[in-house]
Amino acid sequence: MGIKRSLFEQKIKLLLRQVRATVQRHISIIILAVLFLVTAILPSTAHMVTGNLLAQASLNAENLVEQGKALYEAEKFNDAVKILQQAAAAFAGSGDKLGQAMTLSNLSLAYQQLGLWKEAEGAIAQSLNLLQNLERSQERAGILAQTLDVQGRLHLTRGQTENALNSWQQAADIYKKLGDRVKLVRNHINCAQALQVLGFYNRAENILDEVKQTLQNIPDASVRVEGFRSLGDVLRLLGKLRESEEILKESLKVAKSLRSNQVISEVLVSLGKTARAQKNPQAALNFFQQAAALSPPINTRIELLLNRFSLLLETQQFRAATDLLPQTQSEINKLPPSRMAVYARINLAQNLARLKKEIKNHSNKDTNNINTPSWLDIAQLLAPAVQQAKSLQDKRAESYATGTLGSLYEQTEQLSHAFDLTEKALFTTQAIDAPDITYQWQWQLGRLLKQKGDIKGAIAAYQVAFRTLQSLRSDLVAINPDIQFSFTESVEPVYRELVDLQLQSKGNLETTSQNLTQARDVIESLKLAELNNFFRSACLEPIVKLDEVLSQVISY
Image 1: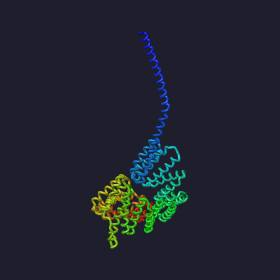
Image 2: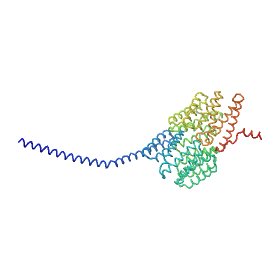
Image 3: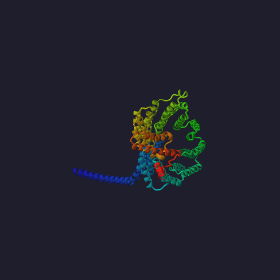
Image 4: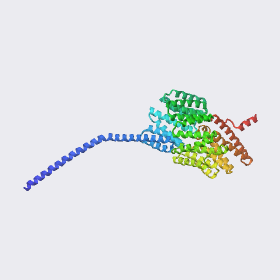
């Protein structure tokens, strides 16, 4: 019995071992099958996951580009730079080199607005380098033309007019091949401005005539109205006022056919500016009032109000100007922080300071009852502009606001505060290349030193301002007309006051002789600058010094 039981147990153990072996063998087969399936599926799955991630990265980059464009249009340039930098990195990460090149081009524009020229040049160079190494396609060609347009703008801003013209001409060739007449029109307008600065009037005229003919043949009315308005604005900048008026009236005619109050109001503003340049203030006011009646967007409303306010001062309608002040201040206070908000406050503060001077100079029974803001009120209007510019990290706007605040303290003879703010404005311009505003603070510093009785220091400051103006030359023509004063108010006095200081300066015979020579050179430069301003071009250069002429006459 025990033996049988033992044999039975052995059979059971053997059977269990066989079952265990069979199960293990089946499990191994199942595992191998699973591994085979996973091995077969994994590459395509990995590829699909990678593709989804890249697509998502590209989509995120495109969203960032749209955010950057919105910030740029809102004039929040520093924020736009940060977002566009992220977008460029996202495109690079996804391998989308076309998207990266396009974004770098937009990034350069934002850098240019901030006066960060080295960074702007770097972004353009990187964009062009990427595009050169890509296969030719229509999309690549379009982005290349856009990048060349941006490069041309950078060259012109830096005073490299011939380089600007070369970039724009390359872009024009591409637009012609693509058949993009709209962008070609804008490109030609830029080329005409560059040619005019170089003194090539006939070529500039020919290009502008071509632009006019092209616009006539474009069926899209919205494109025509924008093109005509841009052309009219450029013609005004070039001093071709009659042509500007004709083109802008054509733009107005097309705008009315669109029945868009916003578009019509923008054209009316341009017409008002041209009428003002034609020394026809009443016509200008009429255009501005017509535009205001159309309830335009806030940016256009503020532009209108500021133009009307300064024009009323110009025509000595002081009471009407003060009546307009509450509405102007109210509209400016509605603006979110932006460069436009900063410049609007600067513009109004400058005109209020001018209002106080004008009323003082024209003091009579008609002006005695006009209530003008105090100097403190004007300073309090301007102070937020400085803070806004700082919060935007916009060095150009910050310098302009700080220096203007310094000029208010100068006018109230608070010299210590004026010095401090003027030096801060100058220090801020060191971070950017902005000679068109730098010379104003150098000149302001010279005036302050003169008030302190430091004639030697004043002459040194004036000479620096004079050299800065000399370096500008042709660029004076292209200074933003929305924030510049007239030549007689903002440029001519630098020359004349420097001559006056040099003639006042006392010293030994040698020093006096040097001062007289320098004064004569400054007068020659002033006459040249006056001619350039009259012709709206820096086409004239000094050919020979006065002493060279005299020596030739004497020897003869």
